[in-house]
Image (tube, rainbow, N blue to C red; front, side, top):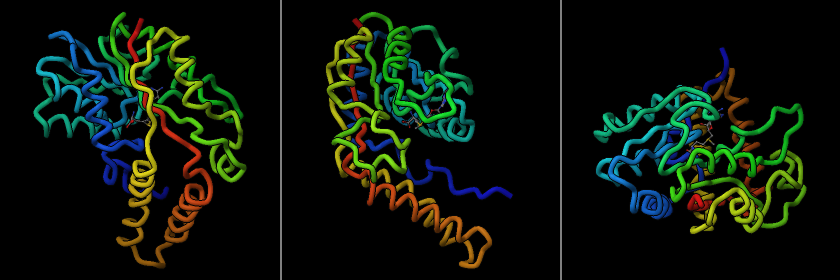
Length: 256
Ligand SMILES: C[S@@+](CC[C@H](N)C(=O)[O-])C[C@H]1O[C@@H](n2cnc3c(N)ncnc32)[C@H](O)[C@@H]1O
């Protein structure tokens, strides 16, 4: 039987380093001035927490999330029901490159640019331009986009790149990303990145599933060594590698 750790949503509110204060600001940016019958589209939505918060913040918009991970979507569907949003939220199990409406009034895409990655045997740089071009095509003129993606916060070291794709050009800087967004047909309004506290909370939440598994299984369980090793690798990758170097940019963009 393959080893199954508790799903990330059991220990994380968002599948990215994002505080509730940041989410509130991004939701306000997305939903302020939205038309009455607006559509908010989340491409690579995971369990769609930010989409659900956007729909809850607006009295009449509808939300559509698209993802290929059925476990995450099932959790998002439960969250929507628990918040009384079922009537206004649709979560589609499909490829976000083609599924969902052709264009929406507001679009979310956080940590999911790889959807537009050209397949390759080798790890590739994040396809910012392909993702932002696709997002622009899916956003009405004047519509708003929240785009979140990895960046280098500081020049990468060999210790930082080793547990990631192993290449210095995997990510760009925040300034480069804002430039690519502008080239892709957006006017940036919010240009920000997650702080260290958001990162530490995210990485801790990610590892909490490993700790829970170890607490719930006997120490000599046949999979226990594997779980301990995975947790140790992740801790070393973060604390001894990319902490403070890998960043997460959050852009608030207007389609122009
Ligand atoms: C890092 S997660 C981000 C999830 C969510 N946006 C969030 O911030 O919580 C990336 C998501 O992209 C989804 N994904 C990958 N390829 C996809 C595709 N072709 N179409 C739709 N979703 C895809 C994955 O299943 C995963 O849920």
